[in-house]
Image (cartoon, rainbow, N blue to C red; front, side):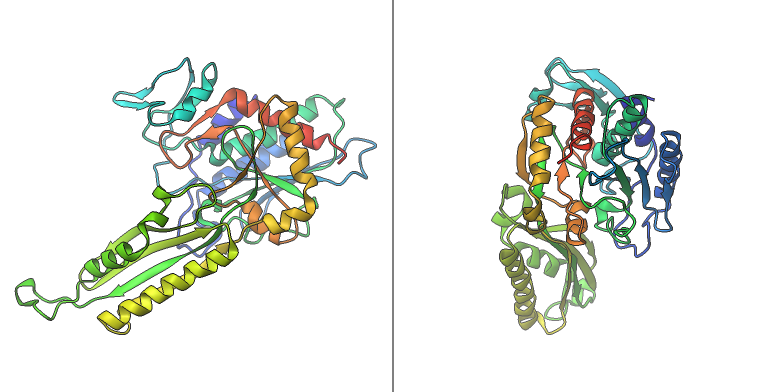
Length: 403
């Protein structure tokens, strides 16, 4: 099975995760891919490949003779896809891109006018969908690349390498991927998540993140008799949202700029809820954002009555930077690997998070690498065959380094 065949096999398996579900995994469908991966890993010679009771897939590939004393390296990717866009019945095709619009299906195109980065892929073979579903390169490209490396090493025993530990997690997209991660038996003291975007990306900074739900308790009465009586929870939810700084929302921020985001609103006159997240690279600013939201709730309760607004916030993950700084050899090796395969390394601060952030705080430093895919979480997602192949070369460079 070549890299593309492997990737297409995995994206065909529907594996979305689900928010607000307190079980592991959050969806039963993720077991389908986990079981496939265990069998594929065993077929590649990973005799200890297994899936645990929490749907985390593990396996190790032994070091070459004479490399047993070199510290093992880990590669981690996630099986789930986001639940914010359709991910079932994916129809893929490979387009040799020569510039201009890509026609995905009738009336649906991916255009460089909307996605200027598409211009970087002239001459590439791009894997796309019909424009109605996700592709799932986030993060099945990372899984396919890791296993393609194992296949390559098995087919070429002359390539000397250190021990390689793999883990494929569920529920990364809902922040639960690192839960129950088996730190003791993972098999490597350091690693990388393969869960980025365009080729060349290297990340050891990510957002501090928190999320939660704002509940608004209103009072309903017939609109004809509502004067001075109705407390419309829907309008109060809108009021809260409009009082968050609009300039500090995702659509108006970039780089190291943090934000507030209302991602979902539900309710009626009596009860409403708002799903909220906050993000910031700087820990002090992150804490200040939580204080701001709590102060906003307190103020609105003084205006509309105590208990009208009820906010529950929970930290999700933290910036891995302070965990990686003592291990900058991981970044140096990644930079060298990118250069070795002809890619331009870009050290980026991720405007998101990865399993590696929490795993780094658990004692296994784990920065993030690109996959060669773009437009994640949307129906215009695509992956470059050539760049995915180069990412396998990057992983080989790291696995064959004694540093």
